Image (cartoon, rainbow, N blue to C red; front, side, top):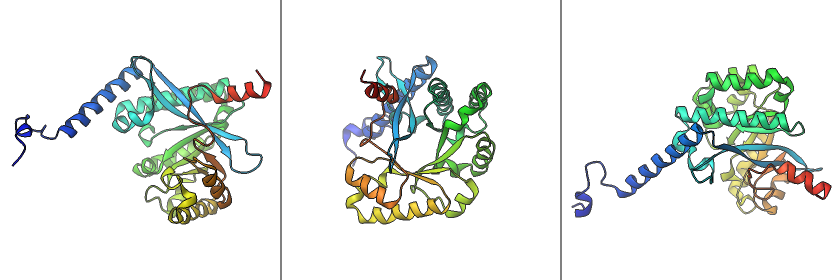
Length: 277
C-alpha cells in the first residue's frame, strides 16, 4: 500500500523527488530564457596548453554562461541539459558563437574553441552570425575551432560532414568533443575528417592510478594519431595524471591543473604578469 501522504497527492505527482526535479528544471529553463531575452550572457575561458615543450597556451575554450536576475554567473551544466534540444539551445549556440567571434576580433593573438551542436546546422541565425564576421575578416576562421560532441555528430552525420566540408575550406577547424564516450567507430573518422579530438574527462580523472582507463586512453590516442588528429585530454587535475598523458602521446592538456574557466579573459592576466603590472 502506498504511503497515505503520497496517496493524497494529485494524480501524476506521487513522486516528490520527481516533482522537485521537474520544478527545478522549469526554473532553470525560465532563467536561461530570460538571460537570452535580455542578452545576459558571457563566455568563460579556459586555457588548453601544449603537452610538450615549450608548454605554452595552444588555444582557449569558450564556455557559454548566463546570468541570473542577481547577476550571478550560471555554468552551462546547470541549464544546457534541459535546453540543448530546444529552440533556446540553438539561440545559446548563436550567442556563444557571436561572443567567441567578437573575442577573436578584439584579440588577434589567440585561438578559441566554441561548442556547438548539430542542432544549429542550417539554423539561419547561426549561419548569418558566422558569415557576417568572416566577411569582415576572413582570417578569423583560421583562429576558430568548433567543438561538436560525439553524440551530436552521430545524430545527423550527413549534415555535420557537409558543414565541415564547407567551413574547413575557410580555415575553421573542427574538434570531436567527448571522444570515447559513445560508439564513434573508426569508419566515422574517415568520413568526418576532424582536425582534433578531446578525450572525455571521465577517462582522464585519476588516470595515473587506473590501469583500465590507461589502456583505453592509449587506444584512443593511437586511433587519433592514425588519422593525424591532434589529441587533447580534458579534466586534468594533478601532475601525476598530466605526466602519464604526456608520456602517452597527447598533444594538449586542459583542466583545473592549468586553470579553471573564468569570465575574466586569462590572456590579459598573463600579459599583465609578464609586464609586471
